[in-house]
Image 1 (tube, one colour):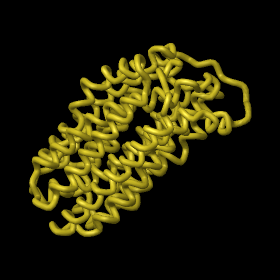
Image 2 (cartoon, one colour):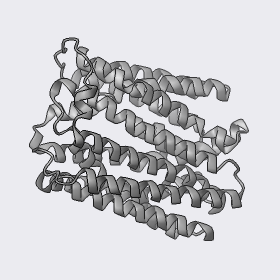
Image 3 (cartoon, helix red, strand yellow):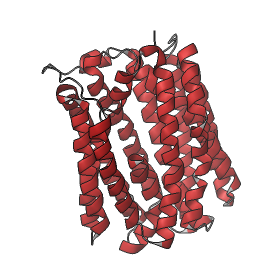
Image 4 (cartoon, helix red, strand yellow):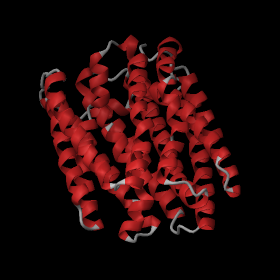
Length: 380
């Protein structure tokens, strides 16, 4: 829920934040970029730290920083101070999530990895489903700042729960970094690259989507948040099926199928944007959601399947860093294309951004076809 509030809920509030501080669209996107860049910057180091001192400790440190940064964001009197607080929040999120894939990998045997990552995706789907709606409702009827207050409260509750629920992991002795061992695994490299493609496509899609729905389609913040349901609803049911499919037949087919659906969805959105109609946008979002719910559990499972226990924290950090880099690239491109917020500029920027998302998805599709060739079950 913490990650979803920081991304999806605040994404929906961007038009309101832009109006409150008198910003351009390009400036407003830094509310997301500051968080994502800070998050990505610490992931690998935090993952190594978690391998050495235990993942429960890194999780609690990360939650404390997220809570502190969220409260500072909620109280920030200027956009500059808001960005500084978002950096603190991003560092906390990076520390928190650096060992997430490792925690999951530690908890289950290899033959159940696909199902475990599918379950994780399904649980996360609830957060992705409700967060944009929460952001829209709070932005429209209260203030976008309440999203950050809520995020701080959830972080504090999770901090208490983590100390009680997460098992202590035995610290590992200091060792050289495992970069060479990780890059020597084709499945780790290709699975990680594919997750970066999915995240880049998401940010190329979602930032223009918010301004398209508000400026072009004339939807309220709450209605804009509800539109994200078309993307997230599929994550409630499909990842569990995808996870079992991965355990049975391997990752290649789910990855290729998911990316193909995502490319089709982005292309439909790009083609339908010029008319200002909502239906093709929602149809494209549905296909993107279905595609991502196939691709992500499979890519995560194949990336982590052969990583030894002593490298799982670092591998998780590398994986998260690469996917966040994809998000940063997507935000930089889509934000640049939406420099102005007039109706015609938003339509043109959205069409181009969604077209680029389709092209990036095609690159990922080629990676899945070539690099995952012969990759069987993630447990092999």
